[in-house]
Length: 583
Ligand SMILES: Nc1ncnc2c1ncn2[C@@H]1O[C@H](COP(=O)(O)OP(=O)(O)OP(=O)(O)O)[C@@H](O)[C@H]1O
Image 1 (tube, protein in one colour):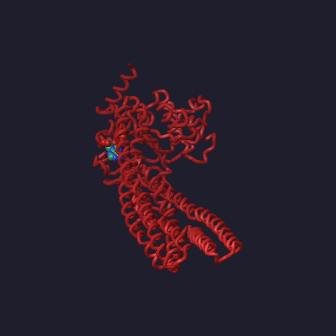
Image 2: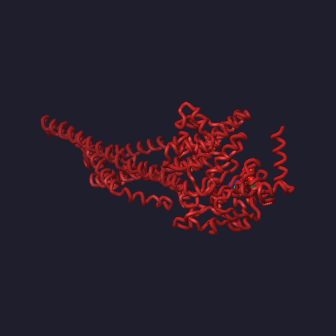
Image 3: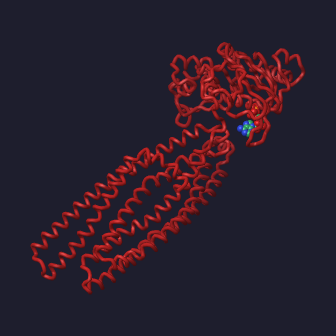
């Protein structure tokens, strides 16, 4: 129960409704108990008439009385049961909603490294499956426990009062039932955990297959993925069958033990009746009570297993809820940013792979200047940008923004001062206009159009039937790689930040469009610090400074002209690309 304690603050939040719900549960059960008493009375009345102890009229009036009471009690019990579900089960839905939101907000707080370490399918399972399991604890388990306790206290008390010896025989098999059901539930729990793990694997696999569907199709991998899916499903099926076997024992065992109790009540009750120790109605009443009690007894085992499953699920949820983001905001006060960036003897090793992506890198860009970074793939260019955006924290050397260590800046101020265009542009399944507005929520239509024009994508957008209202992604159209990149650039431009970080974001556009965008950027970014990562000299040539990275080290730096006059990587790249252009 240690992990489930986490939910107490939700119980406190909804305490009013919960208390009313619990009270109503007790009342609903009390009304349900009137029925067996009245059935017992009916049998006794009929027996009295058979023995000619009462007249037909007396019998009829007594029977009518009992029947009306049965109808009334049943209706009231049904009404209160309805209210009980409306309170407790509704509260459990509220808590489920709150918990899902809490988990999602925590996911959003966590840093990029968290997402690298955990698989999407697993994250999704914890927020859906696990939260549902926890809801079973806050709703049904709580409700059925209250029902059981109420029934037990009242029914057992009443039975002992009516016929103590018969009560002893009637309930004797019940503890055995409870133990068996507990054992069964434990086995069910073990097996359903395995089923859950398989479900997680299946979800992850399916989700990855859908994300990579274009690769799967292009390489004709459908049969292989299909076989893998079948293997995983086969495993999942086997585990589900194992689970079903144990679950199948549940009801037969219950029936067996109820039957045993019933036989004992009839046998012992019959003897007591023959000896004139009890009335005939008591036997009938006890038979109904035994059946009434069996379910709660079985429920004890079932509730135990719900609680165990909820505990396991909450443990998984807590693991993530207690996770602290690797990137912490150490300065709560806003820190305005001018845009000066300095790397001082900075080396960076990715903690998860131990790859040293940057080695002893030093450079400075003044506010408003443009820096271009060129270099082979894997030379550390993106890492420079990710460190400036504080997606990762520097672990060796210094990164200063406006002469302040980056960690001492307010994280929100830093991120809102940056317009970052990543290498693979990600667009949401939403309208084009909303995708651009993502960079500035309150942007006007004119601003959106202006940003799209500057990113040289406006003409493409108005070419679509619905223009800026065109839906992208799964439910809408797919953009070409170059169009995606340009929408992603428009998103950064509309933000009007102090620092622009462009990560090879013109790689999929032709050289003419590249030139047009670069000229627009030149105008727009005149007072902004800009870093352009590129494989093309054409993107780098106008920068105030160019650095060349190789295996994480700066091997060359200077202006375009300076570097052209020096033998080395940049000059070679220039000559090679000039030749390609001429060809
Ligand atoms: N998130 C990460 N976790 C671990 N290692 C990483 C991560 N990102 C990059 N690396 C490694 O760091 C090195 C530098 O990668 P980086 O992405 O900075 O290179 P790049 O110059 O931008 O390459 P490209 O031009 O192909 O984008 C590579 O060896 C890469 O495998």
